[in-house]
Amino acid sequence: MSYQDTINFLYNLQKYGIKFGLENTNKLMALMDNPYLKFKSIHIAGTNGKGSVSAMLASVLQEAGYKVGLYTSPHLINFTERIRINGKEISEARVIEFTDEIRNRLAAADIADCGDREFTPTFFEFTTTIAFTYFAEENVDIAVIETGMGGRLDSTNVIKPLVSVITQIAYDHKEFLGDTIQKIANEKAGIIKEEGIVVSSPQNNEAMDLLKTVAREKGARLFAADKDTSVAEKQCNLEGCIFDYKGIKNVFKDLLISLAGRHQMQNAATALLALEALGLKINEAAIREGLRKTKWPGRLEIVEREPLIILDGAHNPAAAGRLKEFLLEFANDKKIILVLGILADKDITGIISELSPIAGNIILTKPEYYRASDPERIKGLIKEHSAVIINNIPDAIMHAKEIAMPDDIICITGSLFTVGEAKAFLSNPSSVKLMAGLRG
Image (cartoon, rainbow, N blue to C red; front, side):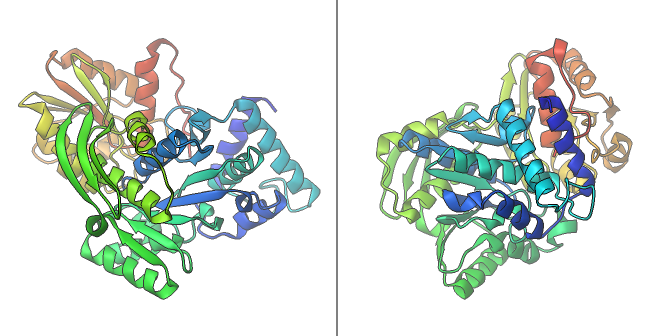
């Protein structure tokens, strides 16, 4: 198959939806000789911050001399963003190779050729198998693995990690994870292993109580960032933050994280605590350079100036609240033009209640993705604010630019899918390729 044929095949697996359970993943892994047993790993779950923490951990470990795999989702523009080794994306040729190999082994085992009969692996199950097989064949020293959704029944939860990390737990994916913080936390806590090590970002009392209970039941050692670390801010601006860190043993002055937003200091503390809890001896230079070099596109990412254009994938009320705080602090009374595209299964009311009050103009749009919400529906939920509907993201961005003054701020947000299309368009307006509604 060509690369495009391969990607079309993978995206077509989305017709099988989202499945909770490890049966399919275990079958796929067994066919590929259980690659997850051939490398060490760090497992990360959570509602907000898990991607940033994953990126920081991978960057620091790479600076320390490790060969590091990184598996995250979703991608913004290209599928290959999901699977990296030492920051380099998997090649298109290897995606083709592993996809063909998995399909051939499925056919030879007479299980099914991915959907022709009863065995129907999902997009994420198949993609996880590609990633783990790649990491095993490339002999990574350690892989940083981000869950897709939840944790307990997530496809990635076949691994045997050195440490499990749980970032901030908030409301999201209620239809799958539950409608209370306790239920959601229980799903995230499913990555905690018997007699393992677990590190948690600061949580509300309900979530932390649940994590403590699960850790105690499993005999796992729990470290909590709000108890076992302290962070002292020195300076924060649009380019990032400088802060002091005190952990279990380590004390570092004037660390620089090149990611915007005060919450990234706490994400950095969580990442550093995980390394301390593991007992990994990483020199200070690697920690400083790893944090400084960490990049995580689509999260408070500044892509243009005059007017300032910020991309942020806030897709739940908690993340939208952090975005609002950031914009209010750095807007300095400048007008904020909001370009907003949200998926239909998200808490739309919660997101717009955070963001619409701070907007001077709201432009409603939608990503080319089958789960995207109709902008008319969003418009009907916005109170005391007029909004313009422009369904095409490139046209919505161009309209925002037309009405913006040089000192205004254009914030494109509501979904990583919206951000991905916006980033593709802004980086190359003449040849943007939309995602055709088929990104996982």
